[in-house]
Picture 1 (cartoon, rainbow, N blue to C red):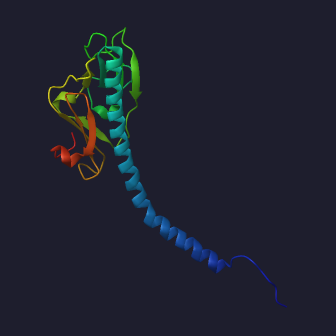
Picture 2 (tube, one colour):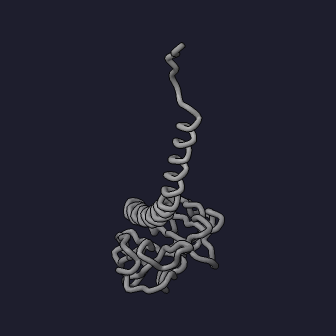
Picture 3 (cartoon, rainbow, N blue to C red):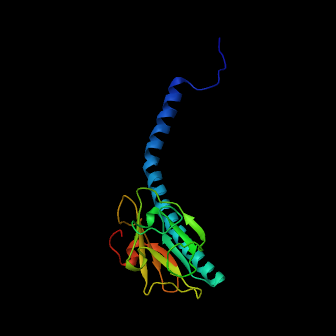
Length: 180
């Protein structure tokens, strides 16, 4: 008696599971690297967007606006680096300190624990944008974003100019050689 059965045999099922396992094992490391690269690029883009927002608000409000690192998303932080997060606030008196009359306009939470994000001397703590659109820095400054892989081709640099413009590029193109 011949029956017309449909479905998989046990051997076919084992082969399919083995192929899926091998494919997954090969794909996971590449996926992790892609996620890490995207995280660095996304954080760099978020920072530049915050800088552009601060510049636009300073011009629109005809009032200084400051971008500063912040651990609690309400006040500027005196210690640590930019990976703890940042805020943009209207800085009525231009002192780069969140006062009672100052309004927090934007905040960005802390970055992933394996990311380092620091800047050169002029941008270690804050950047103030003036109503004219210019920034408080006096020369081109650099911020570098790295992860636990260190300073490599996936690290990103952010150049901040006197005019308050920020641009993202490969960290190696900034003339820096290490994570800041």
